[in-house]
Amino acid sequence: MPTPADLLATLQDNDDPDALVLLEMAKAGSDLRKPHEPEFVFEVESQAIAQAIANELCELDYEVQLYEPDDENPDFQVVAKRVMLLELQALTQLSAKFEALAERYGASYDGWGAELVE
Image 1 (cartoon, helix red, strand yellow):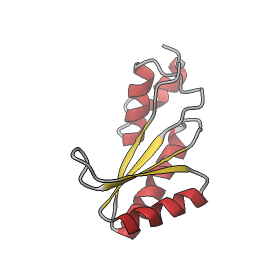
Image 2: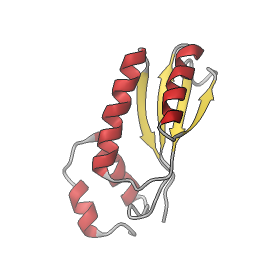
Image 3: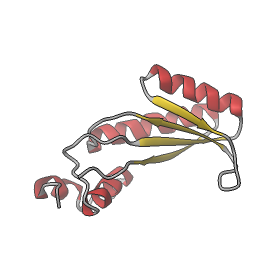
């Protein structure tokens, strides 16, 4: 497993949702010492609100994409991404920030995910 044991130990027995995602990624073979490109996803009922959230995320230097509702997703989706190290403290702070952003607009922050990097 590419992620070192000492880093894995900091994630073990931590019930923080971000820690759980990081642990699963490491177990799947991702090297958490390397930069990843996580996608942060928001579910939004209206296009106007989706655009407002997207604008704020762009101002924070995220690459942002908007997706129209479809058969699988009844809401608009705002997906923000950027290349970064997946550090637990930073991800926890971003999750809190994005939950507050979503709440301000009556939207839902659906969390993040990233491709594995070996």
